[in-house]
Length: 85
Image 1 (cartoon, rainbow, N blue to C red):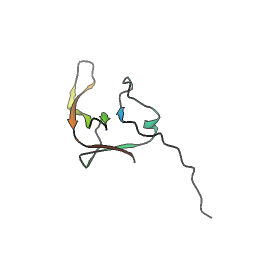
Image 2: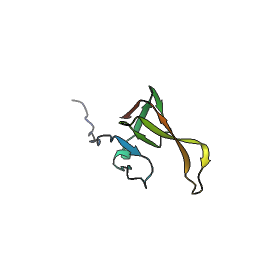
Image 3: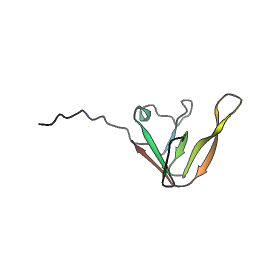
Image 4: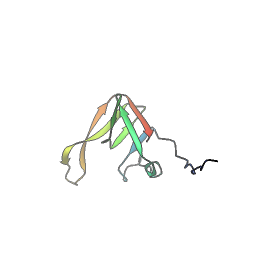
């Protein structure tokens, strides 16, 4: 007999997701699990926001911050895939 570990139900990954808690696209239930992003075939670990249907991600620009101390983000367009790690 094998020891079965309880599986946790993961919420479906949304089309648009942000890591900023102030954003309307932030979903805390999704971030209870590790989320991975594949952009143009390469896994990215620095994605702050994504939209699968529109095909873009937002990533920080080095260590630059705006006047409120938030990282400056640039939008990159391409093929976006989101998955749980």
